[in-house]
Image (cartoon, rainbow, N blue to C red; front, side):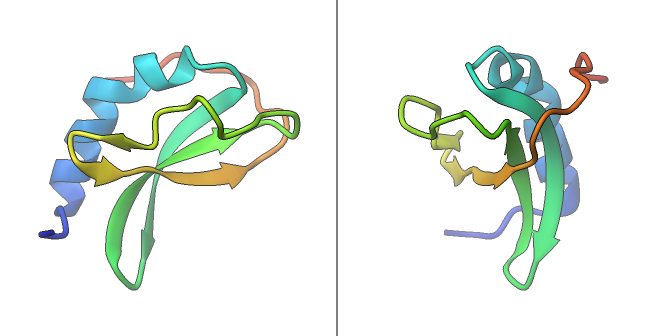
Length: 77
């Protein structure tokens, strides 16, 4: 699989953030970078279970992070 560029990941986040935020336990959607590149990261509250959540979008795996309770914000374009 080709690693997406930062711009491609930003576009994925823009298109999918609202739907991801509508899933139970999702408190935020962001972008992270690691040694493998850029990723859409889904922030979960402590009680969230990954079971039943989307695991990838448009062929790109999502990364998950337990972030606790965050102030829920609507996705910005």
